[in-house]
Length: 244
Image 1 (cartoon, rainbow, N blue to C red):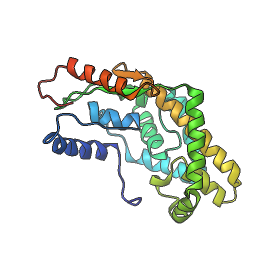
Image 2: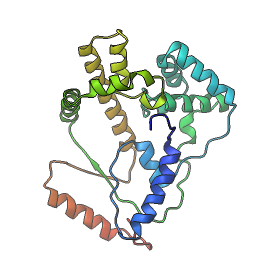
Image 3: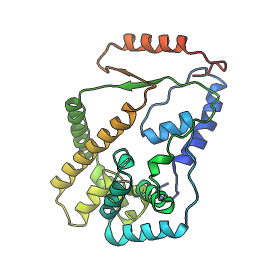
């Protein structure tokens, strides 16, 4: 439900419970994603952050409501440019979470990330699909056009009265809400969805490229060759639990 808060911590907990059930019947489970932060939460656990004054979050939420997310984006870029280049800057929840840590500790949010890996009852093989950026961006543009043709505008309009909810502060809805508010025309809103999706994809690639555990493959490689490569990785992976 869009009214029920759901964060990366909830995702980690729910996914680990589901994995335990799946591993009762299977020794290999495939997870496809997605947000780098959410994948990292499952594979290596969430980072531990210090407690900060709740008033900081209240003030940031007030700024968001009165001045807009752009002010918060600029502040995060100044305080923690490393995390700014990774995060979905259209997601106010993540922007505010990072800023409250920066302001409450005087340290960059990114300095608390990936300090240690938690023990897991399974091993992980990480496969990334590497594609030329021009091809990726073309696919993104076509996908947005397809989403519009399949009713994204109507879907967003049905949710418009709830636009204040964090769950709807995402690429796709945000731009169309500006169209409904009369700030942009439809063509410009669609072009902004494409632009912001491309930017998000670029940040995600930056995030994943820093992960040395990812094995990159060309998605246009014959499927049987990709499968063989994955199976060889599995054979070479030593795991007492036998879970991957």
